[in-house]
Image (cartoon, rainbow, N blue to C red; front, side, top):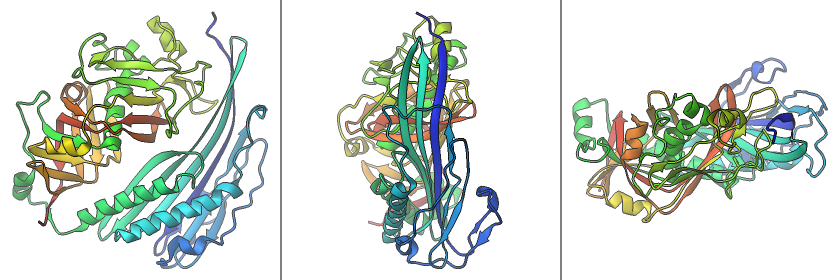
Length: 465
């Protein structure tokens, strides 16, 4: 059977909304491409509550392409901006698809999300600084081997920032559907950041290397991976798995032998309790695909089974080079980009015990609940994860807080150093870049107990008993 992709077409609508609150906020005109910058006065503590009556923007849609930006001001120091709006229609994909979600529908939901996020941040003693939302509604059609297959992807990338005292934190995530459909999740992200910022802003030790050295958890050279004991909560573990496993098992890195895991197929890379697979969909995860961008329906691709490295994710071209079938992981950002092998949703099989059990199993170590950034070099195996806050554990109990923190390690050592897997998985989704293409990816992971990581800490605050 031919594996030629005859044609790929898309109909995509991208909309963006921003909320900024603060004294003398300056929004550059370059962001909207529609005129000069606008400056507003001191911030209002009422925040988005005063935005409830703001009407949704009115933008003329173009069947080819178009942009617009509408600036809303409500109260002193509160600014809303909508835009740019881009609509690209390359083919008629209306058959079987509802039309793109009208702005008038998701705009009130965005305002509700902002209002709820600021309320949660304010309850925790922090101040919401900004919320940006980028909604993508993409409908694609792929003609392959004479068959026409369609798929629809709708997701929102939300980023928010807040401030407590001298501490500023920001986080982001991808949610299903339009902004507002995940208002509770956005508010929970704001509340979590606010709690972290409060602990970081409190009195504690900063810059005293002798005291910091005494407060740090000590490395455990007798453990399988060495390093420091770290419990990663579900979302933090998902970020970890994406960086150390998903990228290293992409087909191009495997076939070209540029991944540190390329020569380990069929060999043990982790303890026998670890099972990892790539799947095309999972309830509540916005990264799922009904069909990839080359017309292959993704299934379940085993990557690690009983600790043994068993597979990788492929698109058509790299699958042909490897002499295997495509796994349905040929993904592209849009019609201008080449399809590349990319993970869709990485699934870690749950084990036993909750995160509390894993923490209590540590004599000394750290508990990390949030990772906000990370990167991995699949050639050298080095990776690093940024965490705003970690709880210092001594005798199975919290002894203080450390942060900001950077977790570093080696992919092979980190996999080999896994000690336990919890039973309560969490869904994590984020935008991931490769070859200049940003696409939503997901990981579903339970908490992990790791021993192959090195923890860098820049501050410490003792627990007040």
